[in-house]
Image 1 (cartoon, helix red, strand yellow):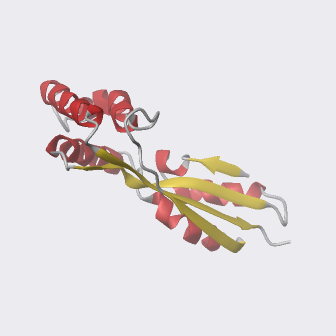
Image 2 (tube, rainbow, N blue to C red):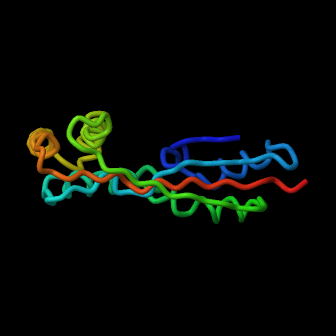
Length: 158
């Protein structure tokens, strides 16, 4: 059983890992590929991104989402009885023109309305922050680094 970026999007990821382990056949593998935030890191830094990132954190907390689940996955697999736990980490650089460079913008587009509904930011400020972030990401001199991705897997005992 494999899953990618599932645990970072659900409350109670521990339960989902337990379910995955329970349905794996004896000797079968269970693997997850998860994020450990922040979504992106940029240089030079940008106050608008910091403000939006604070909204992500507040929204996640209200909704029981662990933005840092990636770093806990090896332990969750071990806690649920898997053996031979292995892991790998991945981070990437997103130069201008890379398909994932604007990923932070895409996430904000998807969740921005919810930030406003939860009164984390008002609509006018959100519009301003998004415009600043877009300009920053479109600047060829902005260095964009992905979040840390953690891949972890193990085998169910026979």
